[in-house]
Amino acid sequence: MFSYPIAISLSPNTEKSDVLKSVKTLFIPNQWKIGNAVFKLEEWFRKYLEVDNAVSFNSGRSALYAILKSFDIGKGDEVLVQAFSCVAVPNAVTWTGAKPKYIDVDDSLNIDNKLLEKQISIKTKAIIIQHTFGIPANIDMIKKITQKYKILLIEDCAHSLGANIRGKKIGSYGDAAFFSFGRDKVVSSVFGGLAIINIKNAKVKYNLRNIRNKCLYPSYYWILQQLLHPIFFYLVLPLYNIYIGKLILFLLQKIKLLSKPIYKEELSGIKPDIFPSKMPNALASLLLNQLDKIDRYNQMRINHANYYFRHIKKKDVILPVRKIGSIYLRFNILVDNSEELLARAKHNKMILGNWYKHIIDPSNVDYEKIGYKIGSCTQAEKFSKLSVNLPTYPRLSQDDLDNIVNFINNV
Ligand SMILES: Cc1ncc(COP(=O)(O)O)c(C=O)c1O
Image 1 (cartoon, rainbow, N blue to C red):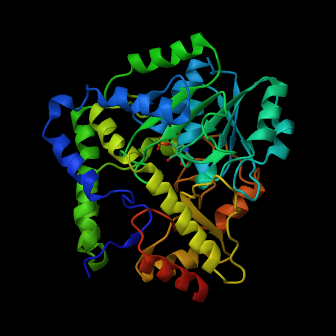
Image 2 (image 1 turned 90 degrees about the horizontal axis):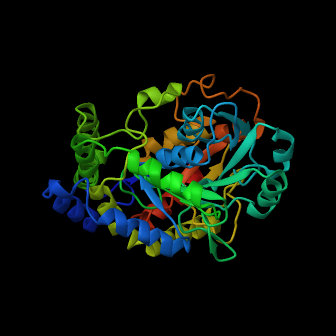
Image 3 (image 1 turned 90 degrees about the vertical axis):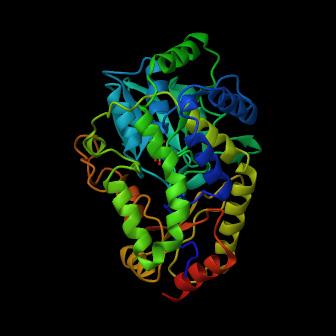
């Protein structure tokens, strides 16, 4: 009765050591903002990706915004982005004054490189490619195009820390790249992000650092909310299936002791003051604890994905593309009756994932404000309707995996 539920989005990476780290950090508020964890975090990334710079922020969207500003992208410019994404991406573009232009996806759910050239205009300054669900995009083809037209290639690695192409890490291919450490990403500090510039351009690298240095730290209250997140989730989740847990988490969010991943105003394209901010030391130290475990986490995700590949037999369920180097943050299947399947799973006490059931997630995004025209990316719209994400997070047990597979095969 008191076991952890199958719940793809509820603090899926949190383990006991993360909770202990949060509790310990709570008692040293004089180190919440400034300390050496931020420095260690950036150094970790420089080594891991074999790059010469890494600049942390309080979220992936802040990191992307700062990259665009570092390259002087703004009013009058266009940035190509893929449909089937999160509102945080086009928003970071519009916040600079530039316009996002949406490109459809192929069946890997990554940008369709065959459509790119047609969309490039004199105003196009950059392409943001997303390695969706941890499956690497077709970087060689895309790089040829960006080099031919002299536009920037920015990698969105929000789903794909640790994924690689021919052994070289995702994030080290583009002219720039950013990562997210949101609550249900590869590793998590509830909020957090990091930007890197790969091209040899001292001025742009200086700009990026300068933008970060001019940012403020988030407030103590904001940091407190994030520190409480792993603690509450770890303690309350075992009560989730007897409803009390669900109620407690709802109330904690209502009284704002827990944060939400997206602010209300972002749904209509408005920038909350909190973005961009510096990465606070307290969250960097939570993240360092998670980074110690990254190889184990990603290996488990790959193992879980392989299990689904081997055991899901149901006709009419389309499995994700299989690509060496993927880390399968989520295992996305395509089914005709996806809404019904999600509802039935919930009824069976399994919270499966709904990225990206809205072409630009979450629900209630004002497409006009973010410049998306319904009907412009038909593949993405089709895949949004059909998508259901199966969990691959490290805490899943063999029983959980069997339950999910049985459910999918017999539903
Ligand atoms: C593909 C993708 N890119 C970027 C982001 C933004 O990251 P963050 O939430 O850290 O701002 C997200 C958001 O969750 C995302 O799913």
